[in-house]
Image (cartoon, rainbow, N blue to C red):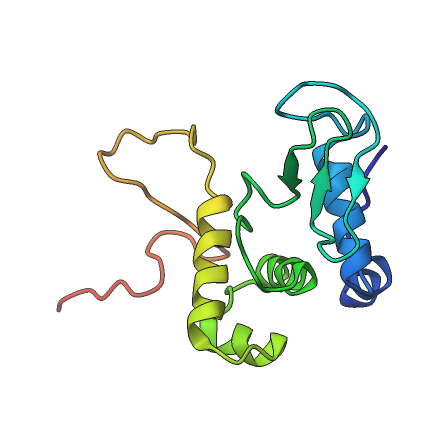
Length: 161
């Protein structure tokens, strides 16, 4: 199954109108060929627990498996819809987003929650095997313009007379 990635906020709201759609998306993303128990390795439909929608139970070994286990959302109490929207907002805004802005946009009661979400999303967006440019420390570039219309001396160059 090919997953659809929203191209606009309106598209995002159509794709993820509530928590059940986020749960279904996460489940199909994690198990593209259907649920396979990480404990016993048997592929079968998982048992659903009505009071715990993020938990799947293996019908064979009866092990509970969290949909968010092993992800940046592991053990979160924040809604998946808030996590998905945070990821969308963070990646669609060019200069990024502050924790205070995210707290306001998502209607979170605690600044610390917004800060943790942003921190975990930033860590999750870093490719561990990123290309080295020969320095001993990481260099990150958001947007860069190299060159321009002028020739010779660039902007900001002051000549002493």
